[in-house]
Image 1 (cartoon, rainbow, N blue to C red):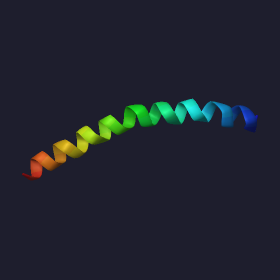
Image 2 (image 1 turned 60 degrees about the vertical axis):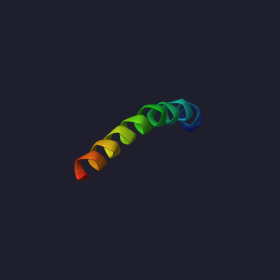
Image 3 (image 1 turned 60 degrees about the horizontal axis):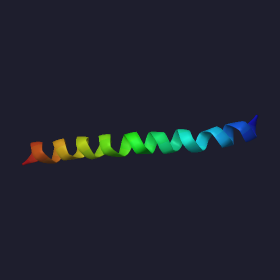
Amino acid sequence: MSDFFAYAAGPVLATILFIGLPVAALVMARLFVRRL
């Protein structure tokens, strides 16, 4: 069970980072623009 979880966690984390990083960048950009 733990082996399956470890095997499945890789692609899941990669997908979260692949989607989350651009979203976080957009949010940070909007906050930075609002401060200006």
